[in-house]
Length: 378
Image (cartoon, one colour):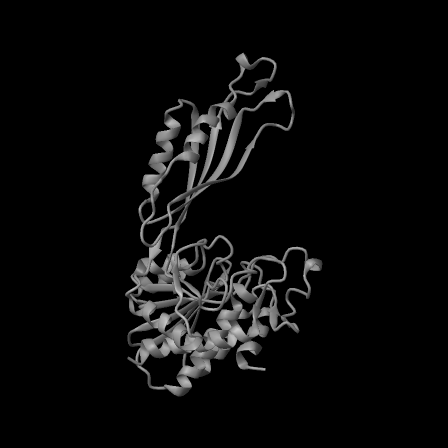
């Protein structure tokens, strides 16, 4: 069994459900230290983070990832225990975190070891930025590590995030950007009353309805060459006491914008308030910005390197995409770093029976090593 698979299994047998690391980062640090990495644990609040760097010169190439995983759900629904890291007869490695994204971290580690064995005097530096707070609130993880690095002027040039970016086959898609995410919690206030006497009450659901229709039908923008149009979606609406004869006193609605670089949080907030203010009812909104959109230009050195690496190892060129949710790349890109996401297939992430192809992990290790060569042996 290859070193990549052994490391992946070691990481995957640790039940590091967010925000707990449970020793994954110690395993990573123990592997990197003999390779000449300076190991720097960074704990913020209850979250474990790891910053490891080898070298002091530029450019600095960083592998970024997370050791925390989402909960397993009902374990009896899995083919194999979710933390057994079972390799089945179908050639798949089954475990929570197999695709998202402990296997990528194992590939990072072995690719780095092999690169350094072949090129011990390569210029530049290699870094690992690993957190256990990506699947959770993400307030004490990568964002805090980046703040620390920025404060001491330690600049990342290229960052490869190992999120599962592939769709149908390994390396067919890489993420060179992500949409921004803006959440809103809207409360429309009315007057509770008996449903038989509506003249003595004020139904907030009725108040909200025409404004809601308008919000849903707005074309916020047309997107651009990198991003699809901004999307507005409602995730939850709650109101009432559960009784059939009471007009509710308020209605609460949760909604989200996934937005392109055509918008800003301020422009979206202004648009929502403009709609609501037309209807002259009492309301309040609590806004929460999860992340700003970012883009790494296709002509940048990092994208050129990863595309060439995939072409050499897989025989085809990847597509560039900004689809999907957010990632910790949103905290790294604002520093000026070129950021991409490239990892295994995303078909089973967060699902029962999450799995990744053993053969793909060998190829992914080769792609990561090739990328290091293209960036640091120029």
